[in-house]
Length: 201
Image 1 (cartoon, one colour):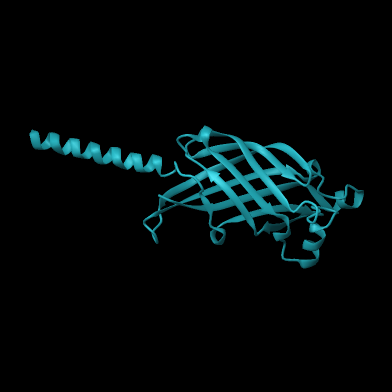
Image 2 (cartoon, rainbow, N blue to C red):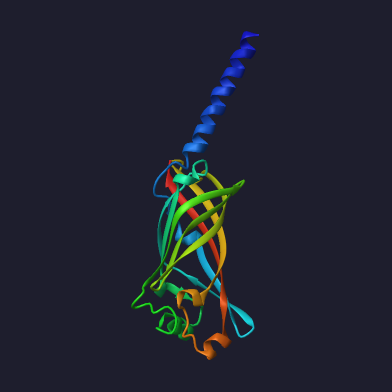
């Protein structure tokens, strides 16, 4: 009986230890994005056909604990001149004053004001999206894909986040607003974000 009791106590201690690791693993500052395993992509209609592109340079400050989302924050800044639609002429036009005006407005920023848990591993980051000189309230739903010890470095953790959203480019003044651009380029832009994050234990 005593040995069985000791076994149960040992198992309970181990379980508590593992739970503590799982909970405090996220209770870390400065989760960093691994750009070689991450992407920020968008898709918008040209006439009838969706055309894809991506932003290849961005930085972030991510403080995230799934057990305490109210005290978590996400702040991501995207460099406009890193836009890539695999067409140099089109990229140049998108960076011009007709669209993003990259010289005057070099970055896009999303900063959360509140993070809400909506289900198992499901969250919504409520915050402000700033494009050009326009800032608007914006909701970014995202999924926590998982967290684990980094197989290549036992002193680090790795996590994955996936998010998707839609916005109207006209709300942010992206586009000339004339009938040609309105007819050729769709108003709705779909955004797909996949981030691999790393942090020290």
